[in-house]
Structure formats: C-alpha cells, structure tokens
Image 1: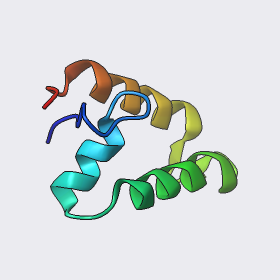
Image 2 (image 1 turned 45 degrees about the vertical axis):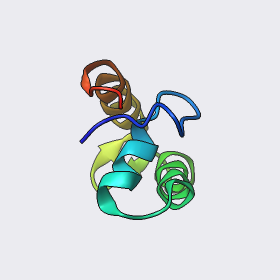
Image 3 (image 1 turned 180 degrees about the vertical axis):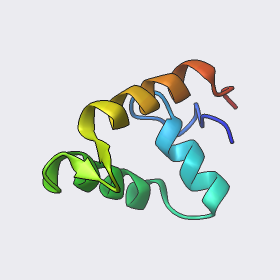
Image 4 (image 1 turned 60 degrees about the horizontal axis):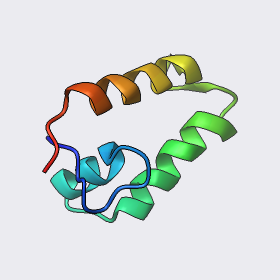
Amino acid sequence: MYRDVNNKIMGGVLSGIARSLGTSAGLIRVIFLIGFFAIGGITFGISSAAMAAIYFLCWMFLPGR
C-alpha cells in the first residue's frame, strides 16, 4: 500500500488505497466521506476522530509513489 502522489486531493492516501484495490479513487473518497459524516460519526465501530487519526497516520507513514 502506498500514497498516490499523482492523483491526490489531500495526501494521496485514498487514491493509493483505490489503486491497490483496483477501483476508482472517487468511489473510495465517497465511501470515506459517507462514513466520516453521514453515518453519525460511527462507522464499523470507529468514530470520526479515529478515522481522521488513521488517515493522518497513513499520510505520515505510507510511502508516496
């Protein structure tokens, strides 16, 4: 897994996840935003703050390609 620095909006984390899954970055971004905002802050038992923390940790530690 890596960050896609050529197709990024913020850090390239979601586009890198999309590339590794073989799907579009837009779809992964929409799923992330729905999970973050629309489901009342809890997605699969993870709060919005935890989702943001995981995103920023991935941004810091995943290599860019």
